[in-house]
Image 1 (cartoon, rainbow, N blue to C red):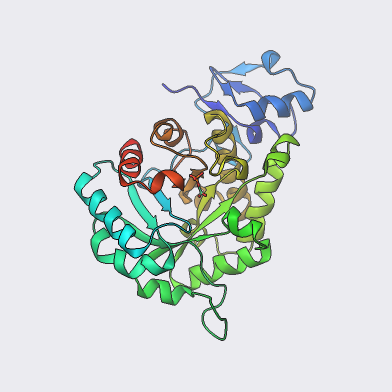
Image 2 (cartoon, rainbow, N blue to C red; image 1 turned 180 degrees about the vertical axis):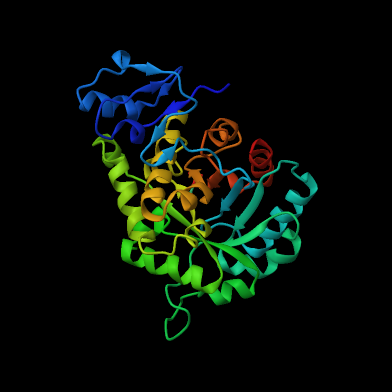
Length: 310
Ligand code: PGA
């Protein structure tokens, strides 16, 4: 039987936590305990099936859901290059159980629909906060749905770095949902925020800003992607236990915002330097419902390998 994972959220509450038999403490859980003046090694151990928190049992991948592996092509690939990718992916016919999603530049969406049918869903890399109107350059949810998009990435850190605020991210999440798209909401901390021990606060604030006030029944349409900003495009990732910690934290925050049923049904992905080499370790983590992949999704061979590992 897998040993239960105890995350920072599990040990943050009042009182002295009792650890289940065989528990593995994540690094952030150890930090929280030390900050509370509790020595992780000396805590009482109790035989229990799983660590239970105020937010419910430690995250488990939603049972019925297929894992999502999302390709974010950013500002790469012309239509011709996108079609060549689709051809090669089709030839490789990846056999994993995961659901592939390809988010190309807007300009390649029309062309990619037919060749990706049966291979991958289509997603956009952004969506307007407006349904329509005098907003030059904006692409609205209804335009994307018309092209066969099912998803839209919202609040990617590269857009936040270009000035996108929490308020705009919130408006885009709502516009996507209204227009029939499932938003892929990106959250994550900078290097300095992590060093300062602020990862959980930053992630909580971003989630609250985007999700607070949504009908609980709607919340599971939002796919959350935890993307530490310092890991994106850098070839480095947090350790699997650090990732598991934040994924569990995300689920705990969704629980507090929308209840346990919504939290259990919400897919939480990891993104940031996912490659064919680390995909199996990251995607196999408890509570990990898939991956958001940038650089490694540009090559059909690497993307197919990640799909097979998922
Ligand atoms: P990366 O990008 O996989 O190249 O780190 C991930 C992302 O930006 O979504």
